[in-house]
Length: 113
Image 1 (cartoon, rainbow, N blue to C red):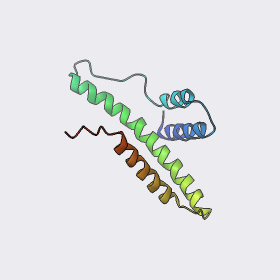
Image 2 (spheres, rainbow, N blue to C red):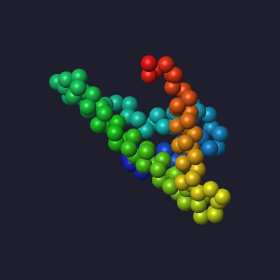
Image 3 (cartoon, rainbow, N blue to C red):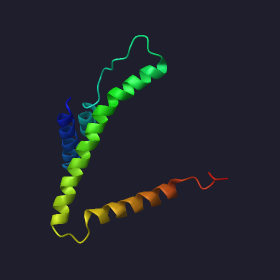
């Protein structure tokens, strides 16, 4: 897939998830962005083979992330232009605080001992 097609896939996944499509559908949609074959030199060492696969995965993952970021940026701009009680930045800050608190509560209290 080309970069713009991958970005469109990310936007389609967000749209599907928000419209109530099942997790399987969204996962399958995103799975289409991942190559199903990788080119690895026949003489490659395991480390070289791993690097070759990672290199071939990095482009589609990067394009997907960029698509998610573009979609979020467009949504945040539209949200903030509506003069909301909370800006998109404030919503993100609250989400980050909630996730950090959740992470702390999930940690094993005996882990540090």
